[in-house]
Length: 401
Image (cartoon, rainbow, N blue to C red; front, side, top):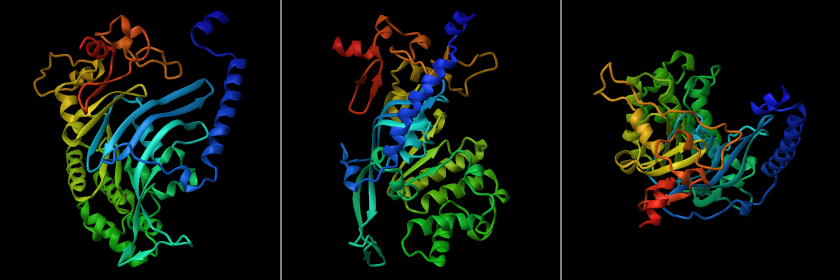
């Protein structure tokens, strides 16, 4: 019986205690690093490409559980250029949202931790005097550009960018809005937190301006509570809240998932319009390829915590290379399908996230695998200046010229 349990992946009490002991040791060290006092110079850095606003490099975010370590994000690297929409696509559980939560430093510790990697972000900061006060300049304040490695920032310093420089639109607005405060009170709070010397009148004016920007008449909504609004209106409020501090990067985490098709189209049109109005970028996370095709300039395809292909929207949709990306394209329903046609699905399942193999994670589900796929995990192969794929098929092509 004990041998059967061992073969089925069961852990003994002794093994669970050993894992818990090791987890406590690791998370204690990471929590201490996260909560340390640090000079600004420790987390200042430089962008590899000055045209980018965000650079994620070799990011590892793990969850330490009694069963083992879940490598939810396992070496993710991609960039978000200035004034661009980058779409991140992949099936549920592939690490899309965990990557975005890592950028916002919203990973819940001590179980969840950024273990290693860099998250470089180009931020606009208030220039401050010797006493730490913002320096006034005309009607506003003097600004200075700084580049932070968010992964190295102490958690108490994250207020420098979270909400102001990087804003997030979550997928379910009803759980993101506080039910006991009015829409106006919640919008005003953004201005009070991020604008030095903000008055009540200034905050209200800013909130009303943001509501108009997202197509809402302020007089109808400012004093309303979240439950009095429809799902589409609540999502527009969340977008207005994200824009209130004039961020450089908006992370939209499946912003249309909880909405019906008609409202989805309106929200996507609104995001596209806002992208053209603000001097910033959008990181759009979704599993909907149609949304990506309509909105994105660049596409990142994730699978089992890794980036398996990335490129321009044209390259990914017109010339997909990775077998998984090709499978996703074939899985998309089209207008030409009739009732007798069975919709394609990718066979098999994702490997156990606690016990990932050393070889390609997609090998067991891939119809194009070769002997080389049983070896080491494939490296990223560059096919064009913007197109990259992690697959042994293209390593062989490159070696053969």
